[in-house]
Length: 415
Image 1 (tube, rainbow, N blue to C red):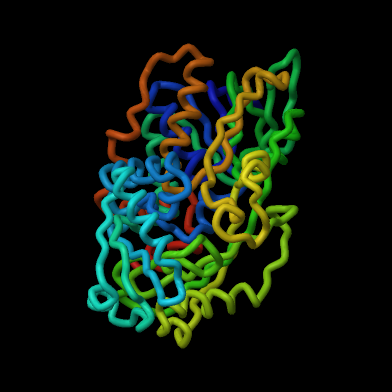
Image 2: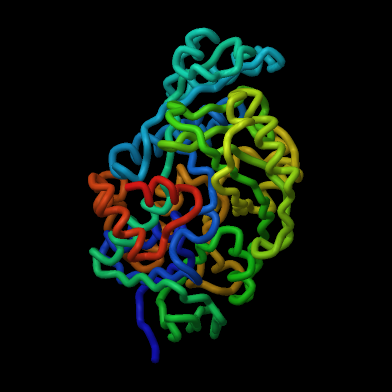
C-alpha cells in the first residue's frame, strides 16, 4: 500500500506540526508523521518557557527580536496553549550589576518591554523571593503548554485536508536520480509514502533521518533536566539575571513550578545517562532565588534533549556544561536545503526554540512552497489555532493525537 502526498513532514513536535499546518493552510496536501505520539520528543520534554527575548538580549539581537515578535503572535493565536504569567529577571547580591544593566538596555533597544524594580517591589510580587534579591527586571515572559500547542497545530492540519500519522517511525528512504522517491513508515502506519517533497523536522534526531537519505545533518544534542515540585501560585516566571547557567529558571504552573535546567552534550538522543546530581543542582541553584522550593515535594522529573546544530555550536565555542556563550545560549535555527547534497526534494529544519517554532515553520514552508510553485502566502501569524479559546477542546486534541507530555501534564490533566 502506498500513501500519496504533496509533502511529507517527518517529526511531530512543534516545528513539524507547525510546518504541516502552514503548508496545509496554503492549499498543499500534507502528511505529518511521527514515530510516537505527537509532542513526544524535544517539544514535550522542554521547560515550557514562552521567551520574551530578554534571556538573549545582551548577546543575541536577532534571537531577542525573534522571541518578542513571536511571543506577541502566540498570545494572539494560541489562547490556552500559552499562559500570560509575566516574568522577572532577578539580580541577587552576588550577581554582576553591569550584566543586569546591559540586559535592560538591550531589551529597551530591541523593543522588549522591561521595567526595573527594587528587591522589595519584587518580593511584593513574589513573597518567597530571596532576601538577597537586590533588584529585578519585569519582562513579558510566559508559559507554553506544548501538549496543547502541538495538538492544536495537528488539528489544523486535518481541518485543512491534511493527514496526521502517529506511531509511524521512518524505517527507510529511497533516493533515485537525485530525488527522494519513497519513504517507508512502520508501526501503526505500515505504509510506503510517495511524496513530492519531504521535510525532516525531527529535531535532535535530524542527523539520523538525514543519514537515511544520504545527507549529513550534523547535530550536537544536549540534555537538560527539569524538576516539577509542589508549589502553588508563584505568579511570574523567575530568571536568574546572570550569564545563562544551570538552574536559573523557575516556570510557574497552577499548583506546581518547574525548575530547570542543565546543558550536557549527549551522543545519542535516545540513550544517554541521567544523573541525580543534576536534579540536586536544580534545588540548590533555583533555591537561591526561591528558597522555599528546596523543601518542596518532587512531583516528577524528566530530561529533554535540545536539537542544537553542530556547526553553529562550533562557531560559537559552545561546550558541555558551559555558561553564557559557551552554553550555546542563542540557539538560532537553520533551514537546510539538501539539493546541493544531491537530494533536490528534501530539507531539514534544525535548532531554534519552542517560542520561535511558528517562525521556523514559516521559513521552512516558504522554501517548500517555492519548490512546489505554490504562491499562497503564510497566514499562521493571523489565524487562531483551532480550539485556542477552549481548554476542554484543546485537551481533547491532546488525547486524540496522543500528545500528552511531562512538561504540562498537570495543567492538561487538571482541566
